[in-house]
Image 1 (cartoon, rainbow, N blue to C red):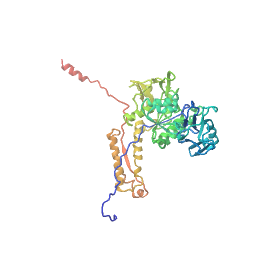
Image 2 (image 1 turned 60 degrees about the vertical axis):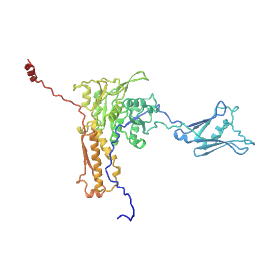
Image 3 (image 1 turned 180 degrees about the vertical axis):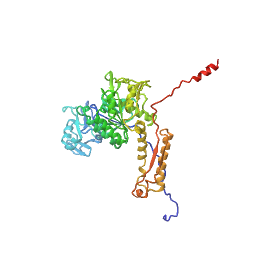
Image 4 (image 1 turned 30 degrees about the vertical axis):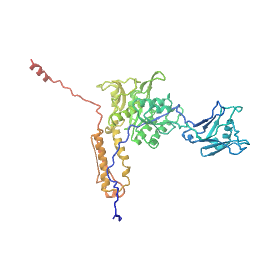
Length: 492
């Protein structure tokens, strides 16, 4: 019974259907290494002028954006015959100039570096230099609390996920001549993708074992916490031909509900590629051979791993057409050939391209440009063999799961159960309207949801959905019909 009130009040009812938003499936995760990656930069503060012999430069000892919080104050002592001193409060440094008997400042700019070095707390924060000579040095001008500036963190720190938001210029911190930057360019040539970059620690002869790249791949699972985005398209170009690296990609793909694109070795034959496909499951796509691009820096044609182009292509198809579209038979941009010729004819079952596809290996063909050719993962389960089917299921499952945080720990009333089911039904209807699926439904299984299970805080919601399969095999049935000649005769 409500409490007594002579008036009116509003009671907010929080029941109702919640909309479900589809998970973003086009985020790429790439593990790479670079010798040329930019380092963190120190903050600086320059005052005075070398022309006037009163210049000083303060440089932070520790690099990074936190060094921009350091401030310098230069002041006169208020009493006569005062000694020069340096005091530190947090990251604020105050330099007090010495005075003569008439309180005129007598400290020269050449004295300041020694003052900083003699104060331990200040020395831990900054270094101080001047170009003025002792004979010509002047007294510095006083100023109040100027901050150092220009300090920047390392753009791609080792083993930390960093988000690149669709611009190749954001990858310059990898070093524009590095293989890592070229991999990013291959992706961005296809589309302005969201890419989670994890830079591996450089070690000796990494391609012989790939342990550093494996460590970087394992950081994909931390990307959501670091960048707000979870990578779903996983690659490690230049390293995924190593079995351990490829298996690490497969493991992370399973954990993240993602898909791994795995290369073969540069010198591997198509037979080697088909054999390799037998070692992986339904979240891995094997690709052969490498692609050929023109490297303007080297002024020559060079091979590039197919996986980096495939990842960019997959992100482009997701954005333009949807996750339910296959990336097969779609043009790859900025490619001038395959490193090894790939024989293909549209109706030739014994062409290399068709034999590769039959054995669950994707390739690239030349027909109206260079086109990705292949739909299938390494799965031997016919239900999950198509890459786009697996990804649609991942999107739906992940979207429904992540959208129901609001529903956890609420009282299990009839209204509550109806709200959850109605929300999933609405989501299926929306996907059907968008052409992503042919249909879907949600319901409550009363045999599973008993008073006993509900008393333990457990409730089961069931849903199903259909998918559109890529029509990779078109069969036209041809007949020779002599009857059409009757019209010829009848017209005579």
